[in-house]
Length: 346
Image (cartoon, rainbow, N blue to C red; front, side):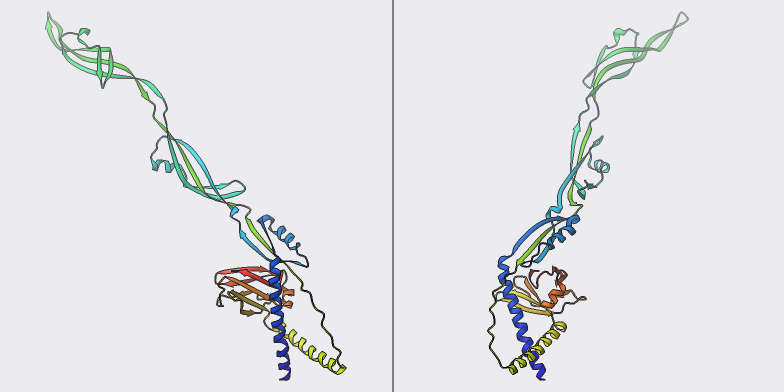
């Protein structure tokens, strides 16, 4: 029972002091942070991160690394295709072109859809053609050309006589010979017409849409935190009797052992939510090799959607350089551990 009281008396104040000191220290450090932004392609990503990790110094630490797909990863693209067609109706045109086209220029790729159809009529000139009209006649009393019109008008076009084919229509026997009394036949007229060649159509189809970078590019934001060491006052050591010193060493030894056991077996990570009055502790959790994710979905929510995570020194040393996750509903925030305190926006 006495041992438990001693442990509680040492552990609780020690933990409160440790975290209070950590949060205060970080708030000062936040005043001297430096933010750097990069646009990095997927093929460059591994080398980039390797170089970024090398930028850390004893006093300049990486606070967090944010990665999003860059807006520059997409471009509006359009291409055209042109054909000369004999018809211009919509259905005929659509049958001559595909509905979508795959675009790939080696840098961007995507599927483009029809966005516009432009039709221009092509006049193909004129040609001349002889047009012939054959007209029948009958009951002509003689086969004299004077009785035949040399020119006629048909549909406002003048035709010219080029030939007449005569044929006896009725016959009469005179002096034992058959003599034509009336004639019939065909009048042949011709003219030269100028006709237009059929129109054709120049059809240009525009395909447009979004094209995506083949080598995906990302926006990286690196937040650095400069650690500021506060001056420490040398403790005033008063001379004590040997017996008192020995008792202090014994009690301190028990306290340190108890703290060590608590840190190894108890909670090692603390989550805070920011509100108008500062940060409020909403969850304690134990990180381990098998548990690197903390779910705060059912915890108190920050009015500003800002949360803080504090990791105790032993756990921080173990997890430095590794990635842990904070989960709230469908939102997930990955954090690369380079410090024992972070403020994040979910």
